[in-house]
Length: 468
Image: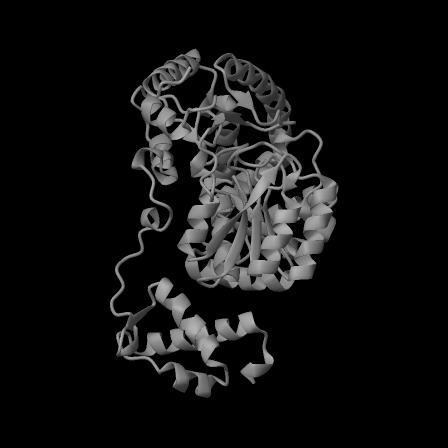
């Protein structure tokens, strides 16, 4: 009986029934509040709340004096229209487009990947040639459902070295880190579910969650991780389904969650019955791995994601999901239904590079290079009058604050006119309270012209606004 279920679940169950009726007869009149309450065995207030939520989502039309009707033909979902209205020149998806466009004259300190010259292209080409020459390699057909088993076995060994006890059966290969997040969101989230994210957070988290029609709520982020007092309050008020984060080398701030904060997060997850999803895509930038949420939890409530696109190559598109075996089965079915999974060509090439020593040598040279770039970029930013929010232990991002009175969106717009693509703070912030921040990719910030443009537009903006 529905009346034996908790209030929040009652509403969700009622919404599910209404969606079923909508699917059967788009545009038809839906049951009255009283009738649906009697049929479902719930209170009228539960039905009112269910209808209100579906009206807000556009699935139901409320006609005063006539009742509720299933939405008719729905126009295509536009992701750019699903979030807060932003100037297109500082919209995160627009920044993606600009950063991916081949403009030889443009500079991209706001993008989220290493320059081509920093990636081991010769090594990758050798790996591809080796796969092509190997007559036993699969270059013609689909992979097995969970992805190439030898790569999953190797990843399991790597995870064990980092304190994660993982079996190959608990790993699903995907064709990217973003695909891994998308699968997890599709698997676990229903429209209207609450998902907590850091504020600020990686802007594509917001885009992926908007695509699932989730309710996104930001948690203020500190140098030790999310603000735990605020986090606990939001859990009690909203009963979130998920918390999505970069626990190690957080994007955009570069921070890493402290062990104490991580333990408290896991206790809150148990207390409020939600799942933690950690995107650990930057972990290999660390010489000494920080403890992950998964290592502390044992995958009871944590799903662990990653890929090699930031450290090896974005072109191979090889990512992974690590989770409980029962979840992996469902995720594998979803991957098969929506994309067939990870290419064996990508997986076989990645495995060769991981096992022949090439990847380790590449990381050994990449880490000090990033550290040097981090120091140089920090010095130049401070020379321009920006203040660093944190000096990260590793990685490639700096989160820097402009002087008072300056808006990073305005700075980014004016810099764009001079062929410099920057990443203004509010594209990372759910609450839009990061207007004075910019994220800098230190590997993309070697060109002095970036800072000449930054200083010039800062000065011009301050003059126009009457600032000092």
